Length: 112
Image (tube, rainbow, N blue to C red):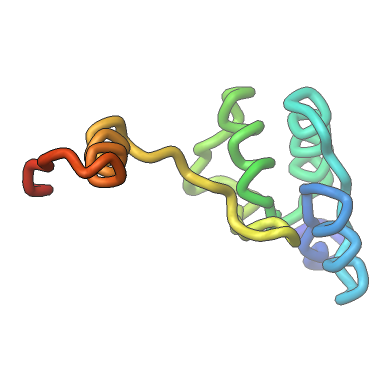
């Protein structure tokens, strides 16, 4: 909370997601790179923002920049899928191998 009261939530993400949240009345910043994400994160954190909404992609950029995780500190971070859908998560190599073997009609060991 700032001296003037609580600050509004702020959104960091792609243009479509930020635009959608702006229509709902939230402030937002479009970020396209790790450097832009880090700069925006530090700016809104230093401004006293209490809730920061990140797209999955932006969260990954901030993790790469070493700014996340930051549990127990302001702002509270909420992660949401981007406007165009959730981020595809890579399959572990063993699961991918089993799927390829099934697709080829080869014997597959049971999944643990």
